[in-house]
Amino acid sequence: MGSRRYSFVSGLRCSRCRREADYHTPQTVCTFCGATLFAEYDIGSLAERLSKDSLSNRVHSMWRYHELLPVKDPRHVVTLGEGMTPVLKSVDGRLAPLVSELLVKDDGLMPTGTFKARGMSCAISRGVELGLRDYGLASAGNAGGAAAMYAARAGVKVHVFVPKDAPVMNLAEMESSGADVIRVEGLIDKAGVLASNESKEKGWFNLSTMKEPYRVEGKKTMGLEISEQLGWTLPDIIIYPTGGGTGLVGMWKAFNELEEMGWIGSNRPRMVAVQAEGCQPVVRAFESGAEEASPFPNPKTIASGLRVPAPFASEQILKVIRESRGCAIAVQDSEILSSMRRFHRTGVFVCPEGAATLAALDKLSSDHWLDRNERVLLYNTGNCYKYGEYLTH
Ligand SMILES: Cc1ncc(COP(=O)(O)O)c(C=O)c1O
Ligand SMILES: [Zn+2]
Image (cartoon, rainbow, N blue to C red; front, side, top):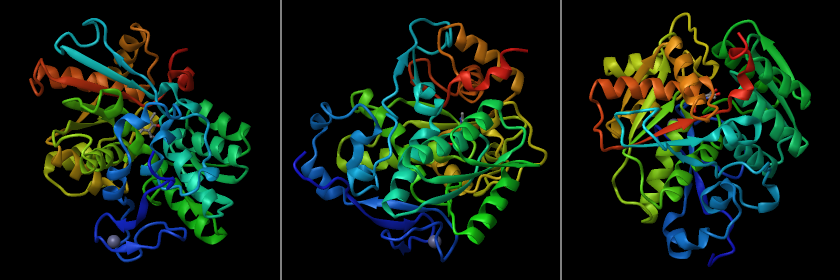
């Protein structure tokens, strides 16, 4: 690296009204319009100082991309070795006979067992840098588990509002690592209101999805890794299980920044958001041409991470899907379960949310939405070890 600057972050800007916010103090959402704030980087200077080749002997974690992450001082990084998970090539046609090149990015190998570690490593690191000691958060389960572990690693406190029927392992990991767990009668939307009110009242920093600027920066590393691991080319299609949408929005932000760096060209993957039939607010909005999702009534699915009836950042999610010429598609729980078994029988121990991507691929293939020669990447967001209860009955 030709510079000693650890991060090239230059400030925060609203994703909707484009007004700036102060990077040097804790920020939640835009104070003018209430939308998510995004970090911006001094990409021009970075492109002059950093070459692709210089990445090769760096730490084998997402912090290898520290110039494009928002933490200024490496001493504040809270890490458990997250990132640089494998991109598995499908070795035969068993998973998708109609696709000639199938890839699986496997975040089942992350600390805390899911991709949520990326966002929490980044957000809690930046929180530590800002001197924050207490964090509030609403979670379907996995985000709370990751927040709890990273808070434990940093020696700070996290207060997690979680539906009381969240997977057993999520509740166990939070409690075991010393988080303050508040079990909510209801779903993530209700947990979100409680997390927001309590955080305001008690002075905790609200880490809920897209309500602060830094988790999405950690999720951005999913896109950075895919690009680097595929030799700075991108797949034609990325299929992603979408709940709150941070992953989808984060990957797109990564591709924009890499293009600005001149490290990739303008060809982009078509981004596919998969949801469960029992909770498909983004699919409904996509199909009706709406710019934002309406709350989905009586949400129900075994893929707990997809049980997000009113994603706060639906406007951003829909923008990414449309800009990429992708689509949003719903799959049934029975299809999720059978796809999970199919995956497991090829040695990849995907979680239900990850399995939903294969069920979606089946549908898109039979609808001829994709061409046989297109390179498809399925994103597995977590490890099935966290969902033991789905396998034992
Ligand atoms: C395993 C898993 N996959 C996918 C998701 C959805 O993630 P996103 O907020 O990026 O849409 C979640 C969210 O809880 C999850 O736990
Ligand atoms: Zn704004």
